Image 1 (cartoon, chains in turn cyan, brown, red):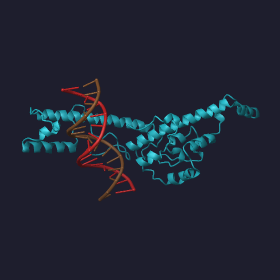
Image 2 (tube, chains in turn purple, blue, yellow):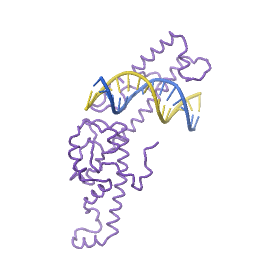
Image 3 (cartoon, helix red, strand yellow):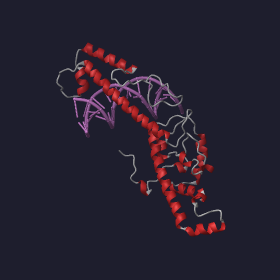
Image 4 (cartoon, protein in one colour):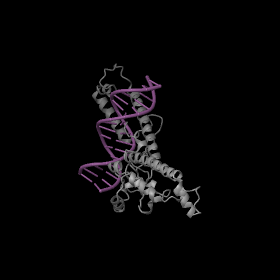
Length: 257
DNA sequence: TAGGCCATCTGGTCCT
DNA sequence: AGGACCAGATGGCCTA
């Protein structure tokens, strides 16, 4: 990897090395030098190294594969592996794009491990929010007595759209209670998040246990009135905590292999 | 300078 | 046999 000529603050997941599909047309400088050195050593030492190279400990028939063939094969394999990793990185970038995290030239890219951990927590939070919404909607449509009495006193509120007039505070509270919120945690949000450096991405351990999911708190739910979430910053807000695994629908979710 | 993150190479293993 | 996948090793870049 010579130079990252990508964006200013984020390392490009795909190096700027031009990978040609045709095997053999690509060499990183380092590997080329290494390869040349090894070849030279091989030539000087005569033999001994080539057998050990691809056969492990096995006693391969000493039908010594042509050095060029070995080299071509090695280059092909390397190229495939490189392509595989590039594809993986592309997928990772795709995941980053949909993550509720700040994107921009001034914000450093989430690391891979952080992306995965954040994605996991994000999914858990979305699932939980969905369940909570279902409950709330069920409450509204199920226990219609309260709704009807309210609509009688406020004719402008039609039963057709009760959910639109739901106060979002219950949702906020329910979400907070769902994740074990404490007022101190909410208070902490302001101090900690504003103190965080905008260029410092969250550490993996931080995300693992205090995953920021600011996207949930953006406009759709208008939950940011009392909790300000700053893009690109780790959020200690209780809303951003990982969900307890007691959520019934989430038991099967895990990061295990 | 240490530590984190990353890309790449490489050998092994498994699958088709 | 060839390809995909994986994990370890290595070295570069960047930041605190």
